[in-house]
Image 1 (cartoon, rainbow, N blue to C red):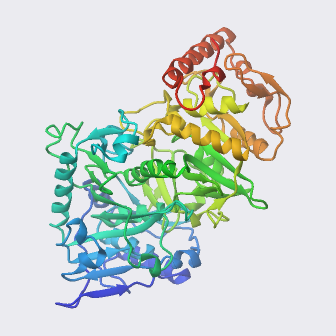
Image 2: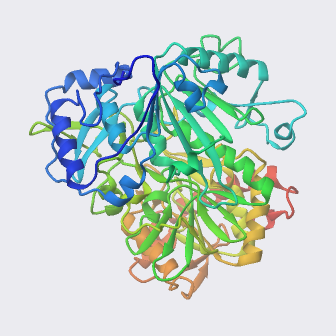
Length: 627
């Protein structure tokens, strides 16, 4: 462990390296294996995942100096500097985790700086240093779980509680008992009490002061702390952490499994269990970073509606000259991250937002982008964000000239390769992380049938219908067991994360549209000219052209024709977009096959919507396909 003074508590406030000094130190230490540090003597017992140990053993002679060095944004990187290393018998109480029952570790690494996280990751053998084009970055392999495991996520049903009354108990919000949670909680605590050290991260979720919550994460390793440091709102000063009392705590015992899962009536030895009333969660058996992120998102989907605020699974950006903002709804793989990273606009966030009486705001402090087929030409902002302090997950690395270089086109491990990075890696991002009420609300659908139009202007009623329907396709690799696109209706474009009934969120959206206006659009980023396997995936260039037309107002003023199967208004032409593809039927060679497929999909919409008929404040069935 880090050097300490025997019999005393040593509290060290770290000073992170910046600018060229940081880059020189990073490169030198990487080449030297990070066995030591100028700020501390790092000699840390390895806690690496077996997959990462194997990865390291195969590449231990690789030099890690990248060919192109990216200059970090020193001001923002170094502004995050509230690191404390607590050493001694009262380290856990100093960190506040003794209240959880965790009392044995004698070294607690709390809110490490980015430089320290990098040093710990390498010293722990938790992965490898990859030479991305814009700078060295750390890379990990999360083992067999390269996506969320939704069947292993559970909520505790506390009889007579508020959550028991409000939660939409279903196969998404699966109920387990307080007794099972207590056994798992005790197991997690007991595990941490066998460790000499632990990592603690205190942070925030929600940029708006009206909705912000305090979150504490307890991890076994450095890289999960790196992940949540990227993804959540980092404290800017020690004053923000003074007397920090978390609204929720996640204990991530990812190296452990639930051997008693059958007795506990769970689905496997993996368990991700949240107890709303106890304000605690435990994670077992999965190293996938997204479980930390999406678990807290589900909690925001519970907390905010109680205050009449609207939580959203969407990305958002804002005009650089005005406060005009836009929302992009969609599941993983539909283009939320890609389309909101627009060099002509300022990014607010790429995945999770809220909407209150003042406008919209980001929940997070970073981005979590898919890397499949990533190039600088197609997605320059994301590509250039992959440098020092970013974190690659499950991305294939190939040895080139003594360096490990990411290969974003090799998806033999998974099609759900990811990178997380702090929001300040996006040049010109919207620093307030809040903006006014949105002018455009865009619903992104990855249509595996290839019959939805590339873009349609929605009436208010149609907007609600398609929001509740949430049609898209599950994209390969984003969930366990999904190996190819599968047609899917996901309410509110995020059913997997909704803790309340979907109509509650629909009512909130309707209230926002009625009160603040805004035009809703349906954009298909899926297939054109045929279904999956026959047609072709919509090009990013085409979709970019459509989004540009929406945001610059030209789409609103276009001439429209009525599409028959869904009754949608589609533009006859748009600047810079091939008019042949705008009407989906024109893109199919076999018009009869298109009609049959469109009718089939329309029937699926109708069938799916039957469960929402008569629920909520308005029955929106009338605004769907009429067959």
